[in-house]
Length: 156
Image 1 (cartoon, rainbow, N blue to C red):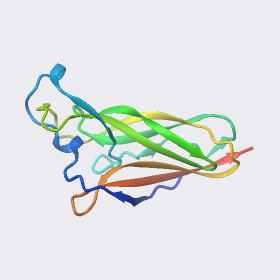
Image 2 (image 1 turned 90 degrees about the vertical axis):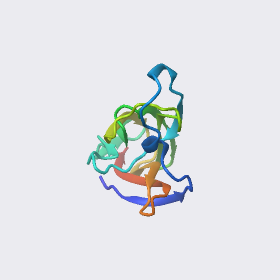
Image 3 (image 1 turned 180 degrees about the vertical axis):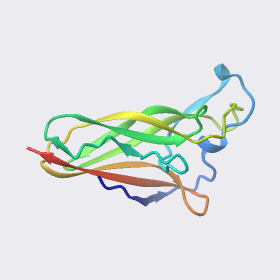
């Protein structure tokens, strides 16, 4: 399996809602939640973004990988993923639910993994790329979309 992170697309959004929305305030049943693309940079948790990738899989047979996003253990909830497969490329966008900015959600300042299973099925034989597209924070503090990739061999 190979993993790499490369800049994908810059977003001038400033602070990340998943990291900055959390403070002391509203009761849990009054918090307004929104669905966002998840954070895929793992520091400082050390957990991989893409886990449980088999070295080989059979064409036409589904298999499951685990995709992790990262954020507060109390204010980030995994919310599935979208998957698009074209030939030997699978693109996965993981989603999380986070409190809306200003909602006053009481959140912890920790940083944990939020795993979700993702089912993939390739029909093309040969090397396959599994690409996860998610949010990250660039060295400038600006939010960007990044990618992390893993590979598998698809057998007949």
